[in-house]
Image (cartoon, rainbow, N blue to C red; front, side, top):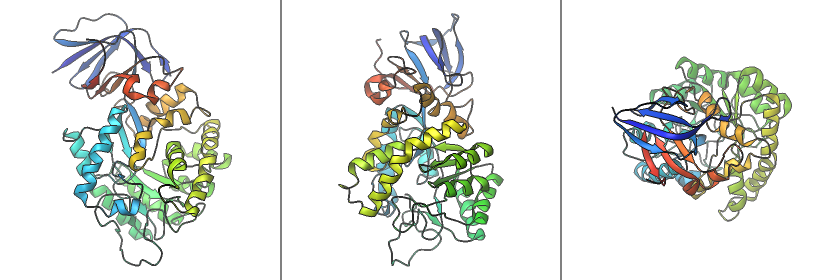
Length: 413
């Protein structure tokens, strides 16, 4: 059993939202064995001196697409699986280097990528996977252009990527969910409303019947999983949550009434402000149509207001980014984008304890507590007052540890 002693550390208590006193953190066999303010004698341990710096739990991004190496989702889904995998390796490494030790993939990654990271073949965050997103015909993950008639239940040719499992009717929806469960999904992703990047669906439209939505949630619950739903409009959000969806992804057009429904059902909101900011900067250059750019402008302008509404109604808000292609590098931009509606402490909690609760992984990730995985960041400055250090993780994060392994360190020897 390998032991590490981190001394002169000021641990961030993510549950309470406070930085604790100078403490020692003991790591054994990849997990946190103790966090204590009083000195402890630890034999046979390698010592890391935090120098009085703050220690954060490893960050969690609850909405990523690690196989989205291109902003062109149709082309991305038609790539050979070997090429998608090769490109995903660089995306995964970049996420880890930015401080994200765990991510929830919101469709695209499969059990093979998850296993590659778990075995150490790829360097990257711990992966929670959804497999194929479930979409109705003409829904947000049906990326076929108008006039194309080919494609059955599963439209992705490569077996990786974001093109969806197309399912119509309760029976097909149940089968599609069961197929994701069979292939090792940790959560089920369904498309409950229109989207920006899809070619044929209106932004405020609803997708799937209520019976179909309920069937997806029932099948997920039967496998001890939960359902996450892409939705923007209040109507789509309300239908999804009432059907049993646990987390609403994006939710930019959320209003007070739909937020109250979310609160009463214990649902989470996962805003993804970074992707709208990135696409607003680059969408026209990347060839997005005028219709897509108009939809983008509408949801971007409402994103921060949705966060304000959710906070006011007591809906837990979780960190997510949803970036594509070269825009993955803007992942840490999300911290600053949330500040008009959240305090720095609340933003930190959204990327640690709140995300862990959503993933049903309390005590495992997102906290510096006994028994948790030893995922931690030693940072310069006080992140509860200024999140700027996370905006520049290459310098602001002085030591990055995942599962007890030091990924990188610039601390004095």
